[in-house]
Image (tube, rainbow, N blue to C red):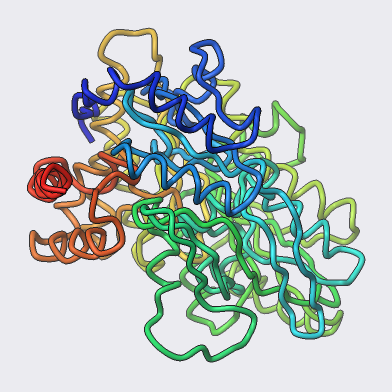
Length: 488
């Protein structure tokens, strides 16, 4: 993960900026297009703040039809488009280029249909993740995927990155809960895929769209699977005196056949930060697991007892089963506040490589060794149940060379994840952060097939440029798209 290089912007597009902005303003309602430098600067980066570039303009539509209109204008004038949700991407997925127009979904915030009998909700994709479950609260239902950024992140971004969350161990990630989408293609054509009915026939095109990182289309509406709230739920907090032992405990719980709702992991660096921030009452130890189970009281008691027996074989520092709703909230408050708490310590890079659960002890040990070798502290907080790791590499952005050193450290962690049988990303996406590591996980033939699929959906290669695919690998496709446009 060396310092990111972006292609030079198209000088011809920048020279036509007044014409492009005028065309967008003429085609869209007043107040939809933002073009002043003071306002576009707010969109110069996402949560990967190390890299910034103000876009040519920003379009904030309120309907699918307005998204389609903006896309048609950009397609006709050959302007790159960067789709953007709430801008919480940690991989630079919404980083614009100077010759690009951002089309944001944040004004697409309507709830279109709620059907608890058939267990689905249909929404515009600018709605936040948390707002979906809030809408369902009174009906006794919820939407399962729950990223840590759920207060701010939108369904559009969740679909783009196939986001997960603490409860994905039992309920699955976004792709397991996405039933249908309405999308706008690069040409401005509107297409509907799937819907509320189960067992849709034909190719699983929704599976292509989910996790495609804005490379294929912009998702403006989504039909989401909803589930009834469980009869009850209870978290258990388990402390260990070594990171490797905590990782071993995760593996033993999974191998036992138990299926908790969530298994979350925090190490000592993170625990200290969280305690200073929210005083959640966590023990002072090397690592903590939060294991949540659900069901009837009898089911919960049975599962908690089995987890206790598994943990006791590994000599935990503490085993604490929540007894009240207040204790449950305190346990989860610490985990949900972890990233904010770490931010108080300074700058950090947050990664999301995924490894087989059986490889967690080895992976955690190697990360500790790499931390010493690079001379940079790392905190581990992650969804342990499915091996979705989130190492937070602490560095000083004001110290010359430290960002680059942190990026190299991060690249080695991601290479480690692939080496043990995992992958580069679990839910943050590739974006620009992992773009140049794609050759570690995929062969040239693998990447060629993926890029051919992009060319089918986006023959102009104008959607979310310079993301996901290594620039050297994608250059022939981008050149071919440019030649095709010149011919026409």
